Structures are given as structure tokens and as C-alpha cells.
Image (cartoon, rainbow, N blue to C red; front, side):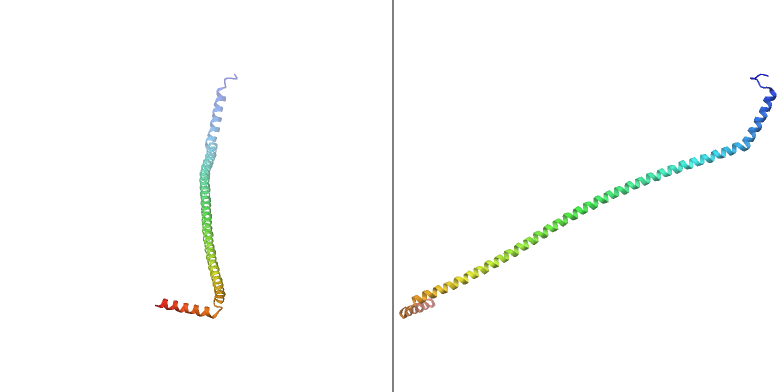
Length: 166
């Protein structure tokens, strides 16, 4: 017997044992292994599909969060613009109101000054009239101190009154 060439009987029994083992494996072992491989393949396929769906959902969530951030930035910019516009309007209104109040106070002050001026003028006229009457009284007393002077002034006034009426 040689180490490189097996006997025919040994070869026969090896083929029969191989056939029986192959038949038993083909009948009972390979279907179980194939079923396990198929289940594993399904599990991997489902995992891959779930991962794709998760990636799609994550991408959608990222896009939605970016849209929300954009909207928030736009809303923030809008609110800041509105606040700036409101501030400008309030400043304009305050200026207009201050100008109006200033003009009103200026008009009131002018009116008060005009009234005080008129009062001062009236007071000066009254004082001038009193002084004029006092001066005229003193002059008349001095001029009409004698009876002859009084008669001559009366005659002059009567002559002037007659001349004016005619």
C-alpha cells in the first residue's frame, strides 16, 4: 500500500460515507444554514433599509431645522427692523411734540410779552396824562392867577368855539 494511492475499498467506503454525510447535510444541515443566512440577509437588508430611512429622516430633520433657523433669523431681522422703525417713529413723534410744545410756549411767551408791553404802554400813557394834567394845572394856576387874565382866556375860548362852529 502506498501513501499516495488509496485502495479501491477505502475509496469506495469514503465515497459512500461522503455521500451519506452529504445527503444528511443536504437534507437537514444546508437548509438550516441557508435559512439562517437568508434570515441574516433579511436582517442586514432591513438594517440597511432602516439606516437609509434614518438617514433620510435625519436629512429631513436637518433641512427642517435649517428652515426653522432661517425663519427664526428672518423673524429676528423683521422684529429688529420693526423695533428700529418704531424707535424712529417714536423719536419723530417726540421731536414733533417737542417742537409743537416749544412753539406753543414761544407763542404764549410772546403773548405774555405783548400783554406786558401793552400794560406798560398804558401805564406810561396814564402817567404821562397825569403828568400832563398836573403840568397844565400848574401852568393854568400861574397864568390865571389874576382876574384879568382869567377874563381874557375865557373870551379867547369863546371866540375859538364860535369860529369852530361857524
